[in-house]
Length: 152
Image 1 (cartoon, helix red, strand yellow):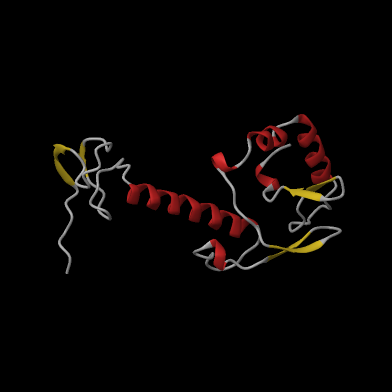
Image 2 (image 1 turned 90 degrees about the vertical axis):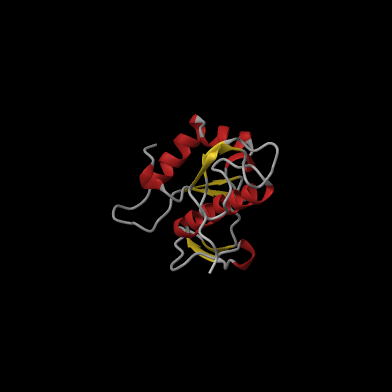
């Protein structure tokens, strides 16, 4: 049996020995490092948690059932049905700094707000599974996977 990791220590540096870590007294039970530790293993664990959370949200939004895949390379394709189109997609989740600033500006623009609002209003009443989407130049489709959470 492994020894119990204390929750608090005397105020001081992180037990990992990383010189840039903040000083403190509260220790994470799982790693034994201070809360706010920025050593390589703690940063990697945080990145892994954030990525998994994004993949879980994507899995749910695309209609996935059951437990989401633990690693994106082991993911399976999703079948997406729109009014005039049924496709199988292999999505890639991008969030935060991975999304270009221009895309965020596009999604917040008045043009996008009007286009997605028009697609949303065209949905038949009571059609819970129909997702509003905008096709751009006949080549790209941008769909709002959570239309009921936004009021365009």
